[in-house]
Length: 257
Image 1 (cartoon, rainbow, N blue to C red):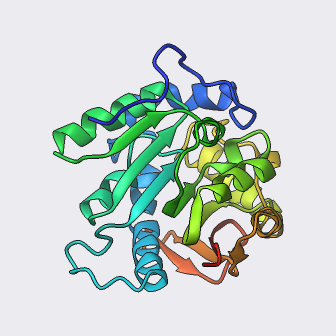
Image 2: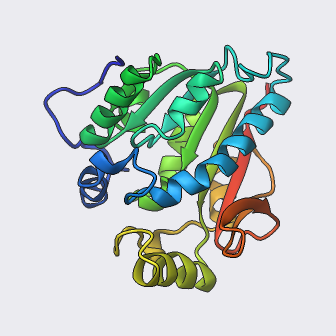
């Protein structure tokens, strides 16, 4: 099983960590791997973002690994990995994965599940600031998926994530846009009406616009691409990439070699 950075503290003390946010997800940790539980929306969303990550990484790094191990040899850190819903598939694709989360129960759930699946993943309890303070190495691929909207200082958090990107490396961000439509769909619709997520999971005021994300990443020395939208089709009951960034979006940024 993977190692942890912290053993005695249940919530790491760091500027980006909001204990109230961590407690929300700690309470749901046991449900991570149930596709009918509280994280069912992430299970439904996962194929779309995993396909995007795989294809973008293969293109950016010009990978020619076999299809069954498309990310073979790539070093990846999944920041805010939760129960490992992205870390595990990437490990199966051949990547060397480090999963980082501030919630100890999330990491415990992830470690147990990975061990049962026979996967080697370096899971750690902690925050990005802690890694940087300990002189953590840089990575080929840095992921921050549905995390930045839960931190106290998004700009600082993104700057710290960017510091983990090696020269020539890639960062992929996925989050929610701070628009009226995002409030209507992600909070009123998903939380209060459809009950896809527990009410209070998101705070609309913490949503990050593409312009804000671009500014933070550009200031950190990364070349930022235009965002890609991710949209849900109620009729097809599936997610897909799109040109609509009004609610969910993904953004890629690379550090010049």
